[in-house]
Length: 92
Image (cartoon, rainbow, N blue to C red):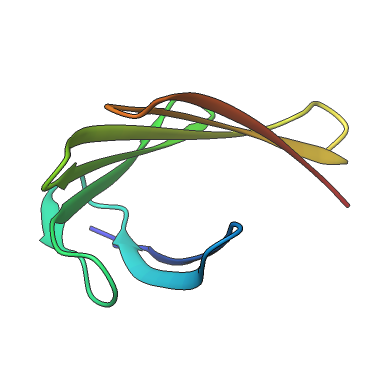
């Protein structure tokens, strides 16, 4: 069985602070500890053509979905968390 890993690096900037969180997503449908700036666990797997990440954090569960468009010129990231829902469009 093949196992894949993806490094996710998020930089969050707001009026009071900037922080970077880096985590390894092992695409094996199992929970693994988050390494870096936040505690918790992350599960990553393919759900059809969507890369799905589920994080267990101290604030509650978070779900991240990454999907490429048909032309592969952009990617949509949707985040559902206790803080609310966010949709990001990433373009080449």
